[in-house]
Amino acid sequence: MHRIKKHLLDCNNCSTNNCFVKHCLADWIPIINLGKNCVTYKKGQIIFSENAPIFGIYFVKKGRVKIISTGVKGKMQIVRLAGEGHVLGHRGNKNELYPIGAVALDDSEICFINNDIMYDVFISNPEFTYSLMMFYSIELRKSEIRSKYLAEMNCQEKVVAALLYLQDVYGARADGTLNAKLSTKEVSQIAAISPEQVSRQLSLLKKQKFIFTDRNKIVLNQPEKLREIVGRHGLIF
Amino acid sequence: MHRIKKHLLDCNNCSTNNCFVKHCLADWIPIINLGKNCVTYKKGQIIFSENAPIFGIYFVKKGRVKIISTGVKGKMQIVRLAGEGHVLGHRGNKNELYPIGAVALDDSEICFINNDIMYDVFISNPEFTYSLMMFYSIELRKSEIRSKYLAEMNCQEKVVAALLYLQDVYGARADGTLNAKLSTKEVSQIAAISPEQVSRQLSLLKKQKFIFTDRNKIVLNQPEKLREIVGRHGLIF
DNA sequence: CGTGCTTTTGAATAGTATCAAGGCCGGTGG
DNA sequence: CCACCGGCCTTGATACTATTCAAAAGCACG
Image 1 (spheres, chains in turn brown, red, yellow, cyan):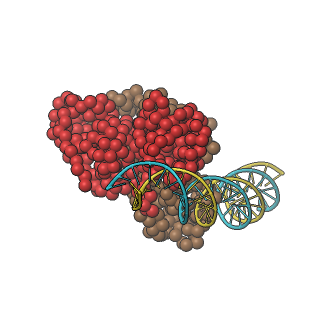
Image 2 (image 1 turned 90 degrees about the vertical axis):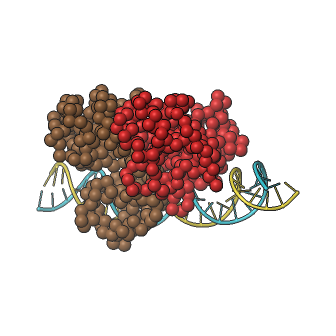
Image 3 (image 1 turned 180 degrees about the vertical axis):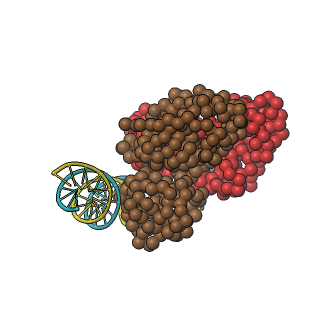
């Protein structure tokens, strides 16, 4: 089912410049190399499952990942999107399970480091720990602001916010084509509304020529118009 | 308007045992003492405002704090509750303003440390930085799960979840009386629904004898029944 | 003892989810 | 190569839930 390719890469030769491991001291890179497991996931593959124990920390070396959570009614939601250099799955308290999983959106390379060595890495590499702390701090704020949006936005605003979020996380080409190709269903999982509503709102946006879609490709023709719609909701992206 | 009392406390004599500063090396405590400002806030006082620059990190020494964010329609929401030992306001990126503020729910003592010295503190006290990183990591997960709730729960479930959240953060006495006294309006800001709905749902819960209210006091008579209502929503508290 | 704010309750309205049907597209097998 | 099948997308009709508006009651305040 899940055919996985293992790589034994040297962090010194890694091309992902915004990886947090770059903040580690030179002496520690060989140790991390030994305790590390770099794995290639195909699009749609599960990186870790909801409600399963997490034994380490995942660094996104390449590709795109969605962090998901399935509701009691079976409705799946995307609670966060992660790209290159992002971090997944760092366990909080021992023995606590979280209803959060991660799935590859594209073919992705993820480096996994077991918790066993992480504590020593953290204590001995303050720059590394500091940068990771800042990452979590920023993501926490983003998540808090996102909570607010979900509560106060209407359908149209939620769809627009989801599009701008995609642009913020994964970027777009000069013509406005989003780098990430998501299905209507996946957009609805970000916006936290029904897929039908997403379809309706996208149609309206297309009629206004604000966006253009073809299959899973989405082009933001007039991102400034989209920003007008979400207005002064305190958008940080 | 905002009369504020300054204290010059020694972190060595501080009674708040779960303060992150306790993870600092002994040599650094005097340095932190010098760069620190311990301030007493009255109930309702603003600790820091939305969209204002934040110049340091706040540690809740005593009391209770709500982290708020006002929507474009003027609707204020409570995005997080903080108690003793919690951390507020650590700035992410420079020059980025966040639409997030903090207000004292009770008379509270908050220790403020300026960012100027914080970087050195972080780099020189890995245990401290590590514990703070873990704090943000856990809060991020909680926030993500909360986002999911807001999207999939109905009114009744949101109110119940808000009550259980209050119990989780601030605790309750043996008889189920919540330690925090919040107005209906404030509960509605946690649940992210209208105050009228909160009133309705609380009335229903009272009729079923699951809870009892008197003024701002809330008693969870049958917390197990409340947990049944939110069911298997993957509640982490 | 009034005055103003919050809470409560009811009724009307608006917005979204759900259900259902038709269309489009890709994949599969003849 | 074409026809069929199935899944996803789209669009419309309906039902439901929550918001909004409104009014009366409770409570704290001076």
